Amino acid sequence: MGAPTGRHDPRGLLKVTRHPMLAAFAVFGIAHMLMNGWAGDVIFFGMFPVLAVISGVHQDGRKLRELGDGYRGFKAQTSIVPFAALISGRVKWQAADTPWSAISGGIFLTAIIVALHPMIFGGNPLG
Image 1 (spheres, rainbow, N blue to C red):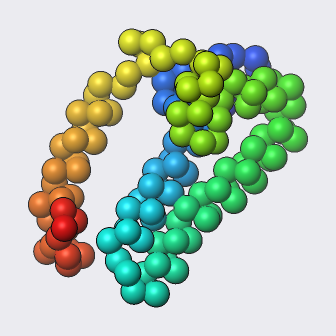
Image 2: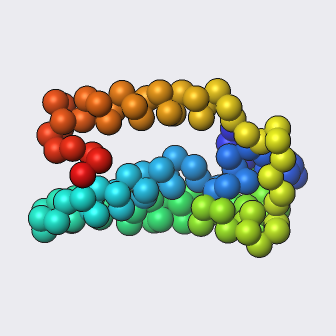
């Protein structure tokens, strides 16, 4: 599901953000910084969004060097900031872009992680 080698329109989650896994790491870090006020926790979890942004910029530069104009067009249509390309109208969300099996799996895994979080990691993730 990576960026195209030729000139192709983004599809699926790439319409939301050009780097979906890095966006997930950033959200994870921000959520954990909000719940953990100790300086060590803030520094540790704060590095997740920092590294996500640095990694996204680095990956864009590398892909531009490797793929050239094909990636330049892809980059112009998408955004590193989640939902920015959709809000600005550069891409349009269609029903076929909704990954229902991934959403279902995510809900299931979230329920398991929330239930097991106190036993594995400590602390109640719901407050």
